[in-house]
Length: 164
Image (cartoon, rainbow, N blue to C red; front, side, top):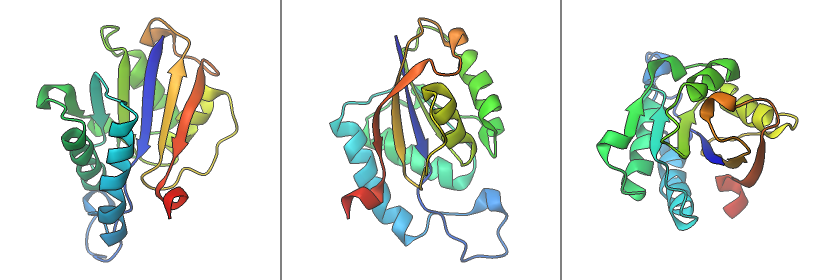
């Protein structure tokens, strides 16, 4: 069995209208919510073999906080430019190409792709997937290449507003 942790980036800022979408930083709420979310992931011992993230600024900052909280080595973390604004099919193809030596992967990405991927793999209707949301899936596959619709079961679904 494989495990997958899907995370949407923390809340980003729209304050600087001159910035391209790719370059938007986290806003104060995102900066506040992110450490608590990373700590909940650490407390649940969801330590990935590899952390893959979109190279947009807000996802990079989210991934770096997770890397730090989980004490992941730099070699286990990789920015993946094609994850920026990726649809669920692109994310699924990325996962299907991962080495089977990795039993647990973490993706930090964007909506709607990340939410739609979680829905596809769990065989459920897409659900609200707010910023800094985490979905942990157990996948009934032995190889990443076997990933398909409804092959997973959600073990944990969490986001900051559940803790206010």
